[in-house]
Image 1 (cartoon, helix red, strand yellow):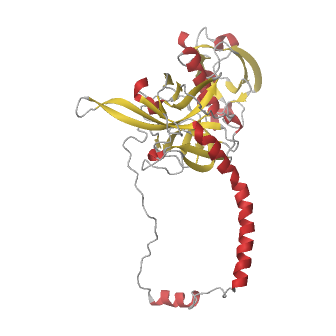
Image 2 (image 1 turned 90 degrees about the vertical axis):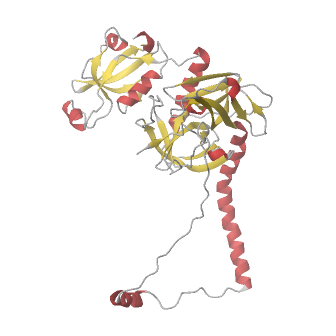
Image 3 (image 1 turned 45 degrees about the vertical axis):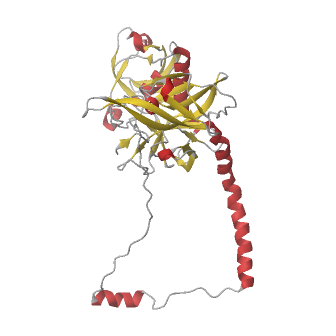
Length: 391
């Protein structure tokens, strides 16, 4: 799978509109094939019997009743669109880019989306770092649904998660509620809202296709901490930074990347879960930078079934420890090489990348419980995670 994040999100993007048709090849049949065709294909086309005006009127009456059922069920999507629309913004950012061929700096307009949220009684716009990366505050234009344009007061971003948050102030801003992305399950309905190819406030519909995508190749973007929700809702260049919304109208993800061979939507999109996004956003607002916790373990990157069987596990779940950092929280907790960390603070650990995410996004200094597997039995230990910057 080639993961293509819209890192050039809609910049100078051309929208090609193509009529879709069906072309049939016409040829000749061999005598044998012709004989088969004569046996299996009726010589006449089956037609429905003529319908009287009275019967047509009755069919329309039945159709209206049937349509009412579907319309009532689909009304939720119209309600979501009405509620979420005013919270979604279009973002334009003039970004300086150095031309390798020409050897000089030129301005490139990046285009993306964002969502207004309220954090501690203040308004902010959530978006992706790659949408505004390198742009000054004055070079970022935020377009509201009502036609107003404003500039952010301040901008924070984080390379490792592709999170960006901007403080904004204007009268009558409408904020979107933020939902619990951990509650989303594969198969849940979602809507994506944004500006694909500059088409403002477009809404697409799909489901959560998968969770916990942590191995996407996003070029040299520096996005190391990944835990993407995957969706088949249509996401295209320009959608980056826009919300992925549940049926309650809550943001449960921020649309970030697509997997594509063409650069356009192939119904494989990825969104940063809202829980992960909000942890980083609040760190940026409070501290001016992201804070990363540290446990002090080196993990086996390829914990295979055979290795799991060797230590008495039925399958390769959790993260296997290969080394311990001296004087680290792991040392203080008594962790040892060969331990398999099955749970981190009550959350089952899926693999080494999952544990890295869980640790990094934990509040520094917090004491967490670790369920480990050692000597073919489970043990529970405690560890107070430290500041990664100290190690």
